[in-house]
Amino acid sequence: MLNVALVGFGYWGPNLARNFSSLPGCKLAYICEPREVRAQEAALLYPQAKVTPDYQKLLQDPEVGAILIATPVSSHYDLTKRALLAGKDVLVEKPLVADVAQGKELVDLADEKERIMAVDHTFLFTGAVMKMKELVEAGELGDLLYFDSVRINLGLFQPDVNVIYDLAPHDISILTHLYPQEPVAVQAMGARHPKHRQEHHAYLHLDYSGAFMAHLHLSWLAPVKVRRTLLGGSQKMMVYDDLEGSEKIKVYDKGVTITNGDLNSVYQVQVDYRTGDMLAPRIKHSEALRTEAEHFLDCVARRSRPLADGREGLRVVRILQASRISMQEEGRKVYLEELD
Image (cartoon, rainbow, N blue to C red; front, top):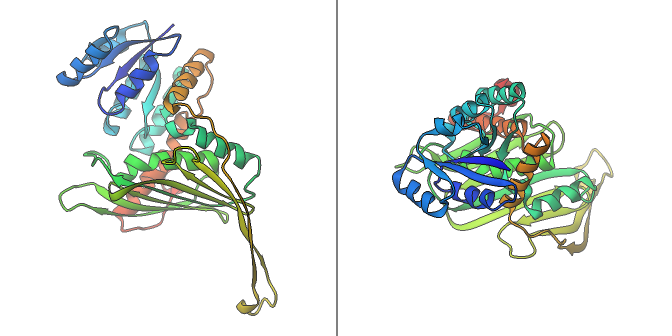
């Protein structure tokens, strides 16, 4: 039986509590929440858990094996570091931290203490993304050419992070999962609401060393909710629409064949369009967070590397920090080697 302790019972914490408390072989032993109203709600819903505002109590209890962190990004570094130093395994909400240097320190500390550190990149555990990964690895799309995502809605303005830090970790984690190569450079442009200090609308572009490129559109200030990703390949193209009820993934047998005639004349380039069938593959329908929770418990038991471990979390943070620098410098192309 693994005793876990949850830190934070705000927006995402209740989802973690619901899943971990219902898993066999796992006990929700503590909920740490300083706000009295939320602490009372937690105590009512989970009477088996000790509810406390004191984080140190969780760390000092030798019966607690893992800490679940669902707090604002600005607190992740301190809470995660203290948990690792106390010998606890950790699952931390995305993004891992706000700063690359802090992320590197936590990754090294987890290695030094031989602790499991996982980042809550929930979308990697959806049936849709798992199917996308399967199709990409099987070569169904051919060579990948581009990744284009839109994640917009009339959303919750965050006080401590901009829209990229809030929404982009979902898409970046999917991107790095499907296309493991590191980007070379990042460019970002964003806009702020006149009465808010954080960017609410942003465009993020990633350059790679080959022909592949990625583009993300993110917004808290859109009249409609869109969750759509396009993945283009040399053989086929794929559309992932998370708002679709059943056919979340559609694979299109569409593409072009380009042949050159007289290389000295652009008018001699010939383009043949190919249009074939559309396939909506069957995907597994289950709650991604529960699948992720089961995966985390298995990694803790086996002492194995999580799918979204600290290093994967750090890859996402590198892109986020580069985007922040780029926005601050009016869209300058920021090379990731600048962050090393």
